[in-house]
Image 1 (cartoon, helix red, strand yellow):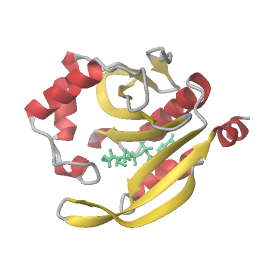
Image 2 (cartoon, protein in one colour):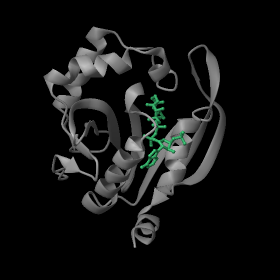
Image 3 (tube, helix red, strand yellow):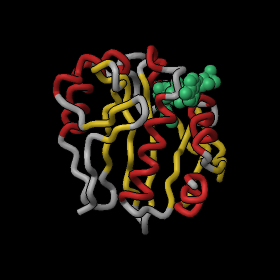
Length: 185
Ligand SMILES: CC(C)(COP(=O)(O)OP(=O)(O)OC[C@H]1O[C@@H](n2cnc3c(N)ncnc32)[C@H](O)[C@@H]1OP(=O)(O)O)[C@@H](O)C(=O)NCCC(=O)NCCS
């Protein structure tokens, strides 16, 4: 079974397992349409958040298709300010990363810092070969995170998704383990 040792500490953040007490903070940002804009599904109800936090708190990461969402907390201020996600994709050594932040936590580089820690987990802890991120082409804030991380823009799939009542173009950023190693030197 892959080993994910928590919490993960970065310069300014703690990435840890979700717990029931995170529900109100999680709901505060996932109930906002602006958070849901580039995520599948609508802004989440309290009940949906309760289910989601329960699932995240009890994550199982044992085989392809499993995924983990880690609560992001500022090291100097307790409380969830967002989450960073790692999916174990089907194939050999393949992962996908994703992120969301509460509006008040944006603009400080926290999502980039959390995602970088998850790339490190994937490449160095789980021995992944390739990690990608799939974004709505209009989600420039997420594209900027990928660029800051040094991920490559790999693909653009026009009208790949239909959600929120309209077609959306998917862009795919990716990084290989060799690229991670070269970047980390
Ligand atoms: C996507 C999302 C996480 C981006 O948040 P963000 O705050 O822009 O990203 P970061 O936390 O990495 O912060 C980067 C910003 O902080 C600034 N910043 C300040 N200090 C920084 C530092 N030490 N390091 C890096 N960036 C820093 C950057 O310049 C950038 O600001 P800018 O966009 O004005 O240039 C956020 O918009 C969000 O949660 N959206 C809703 C959910 C969503 O769409 N999720 C992604 C689906 S693919």
